[in-house]
Length: 418
Image (cartoon, rainbow, N blue to C red):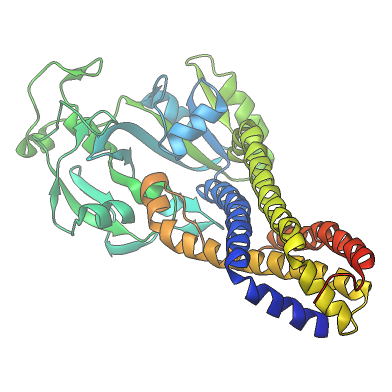
């Protein structure tokens, strides 16, 4: 305890350089833990986007691409699926429920999803949690819309408000379906998934705004609201659909049946397998980030070592005074190790504080820009291990200046004039 108190007083006398050293270590620790936190939180957010679904079915393409555009609303489908094909698979005896998706439109930068009311009944996220309504209810008519929580919050929309859907998935569209504005009838509770950034409408509504279109372009007159009862709004094609089975035992049999479907080039993927493939492609980037973070920590600790070593010559008088009052070389050795350990521990704790401050700052930004919900939670077991390694490394690095001070103390003895 006496050595520890002496180390604290010694650092206080050199508080300028000590604070800079602690800050350097803190920044490296913040980066290390921040990268680990973002990595795990991103993976968790992706994994929690869809649960309770056995198969995702879409046009034949890569399974990661199918997962991205159907579930995460990233990218676009290479092709569509005919409504007839969807109905045939949906009526298979192994299928318990199915929900069709129609993508391709947007509203002020947010993707529009055409689906059925069954979407709100069967779609699950997280630990098989149901979608719930913060306000209003599911759409019933063809030109009604249900907004994700982020859409309503960012655009400040309320129930009863009219919105216009634009053709295409980009922020800027030259074709707006302003002949049929949609009425907001429901706003969902936040989920921390792409659902929050989606405008949900009925498949009939998608057909209505594209009435008279051919090959993705308008060819006939626009349909008006009073004409909706006079036309058939059954879709001809959809983008993809999700399937829930009566028994998990039928999963691979139905997947094989879909993948070998002769009438149309379609495929079925297991969400978990597709997610695993997605993360395996990102594994190298994850490891690279961790390696870079590790090198930053090493740089911070080396900076501490440099500071301690360069101050040794200036502190020879201090060491001589300590020897004159009865301190042994082993006490000098312990003092330098304690100083290094205190600096490393203070840097690690400051780094944790900076990490939580940074999380509070970037949480809304990460949600708005990337749809990643970063939880403010306690340090995980792995993060505590990383933190312990940093602190222990500080003590180990402290052995170098401590040993040098020990040797200097033995050599100097009482020869330095006090």
